Figure 1 (cartoon, each protein chain N blue to C red):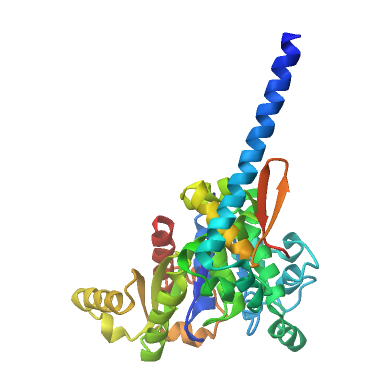
Figure 2 (figure 1 turned 120 degrees about the vertical axis):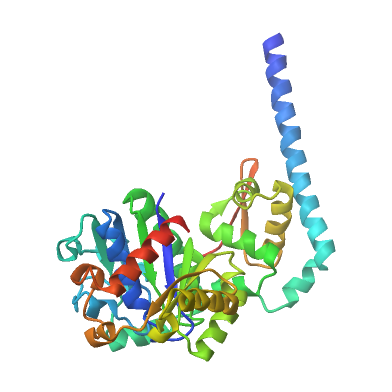
Length: 258
Length: 120
């Protein structure tokens, strides 16, 4: 059976969405059947990365019970240029939709959790997906905790920012541990001088692991090219030889065995 | 004649078993009430509106595991929950009844089986 991976972070701007999309593309390159869902209803971004600004149905409609998940999914395989299959489910970026989603009550959130949990049956069992990836809102939002409860594995993206590290540690004890989730850390945007030699790199892994008390799956250097691309490039698809793409391929391989 | 008698004995035994199951279940609820205080105490509290993730986070670890499992299964017996959590059926039955008393779960009988679920 396939696996559900939630990509989460304490703070915004850690590179969560870009990593989610690239990890999904890495699996699709390996011939896997994958799907990425944008569960960041406060600041949807996958529509920009996938350049798909409109959709007949959004994930908002699925969680509202207005349609089934197959209506939301867009087959991205032709644009993906991969050996596998890739589907995308987008969150509605319209201001009205953002306002509507932020005004939901606890009963609605409870039903939304039920709808997310049922994706295991519809997408992993019936559609036989290998990987379902959730891009989530940062911090302790209803939508992100719903995603974490529904996931098999949580990848937490952190930067070297002290408040980010402290917040991630808190979430480890007060969120991931409580739901008994298999959790791994991805340190992103790490200054290159931290990783200038093998010894430096090993030291960085050890330091970050002792800070987070969780396995650090990858320490990703801060690449100017990634910043310059402004979130418009899927490196694993467009620049397979780029060191960022190689980092993502390595993450995908580690998560497979995680 | 012998076959009829055998059949009525089987029916009788089935009824006794059913009564014992119900009795056992009532005992489990009774034990939970004793452990947690009187049922009235729960009624006096602000009743939770929903078993949402924030509520799940506020539950003690042992109840959270049971509650998350019921959220995943939707509608399940204590035995089905126990299969998932790898804990004893009687333990899960106790926790499930406790969650019913706390108004987070509902319980319904279908024949001899008691099913627990989250009311949506």
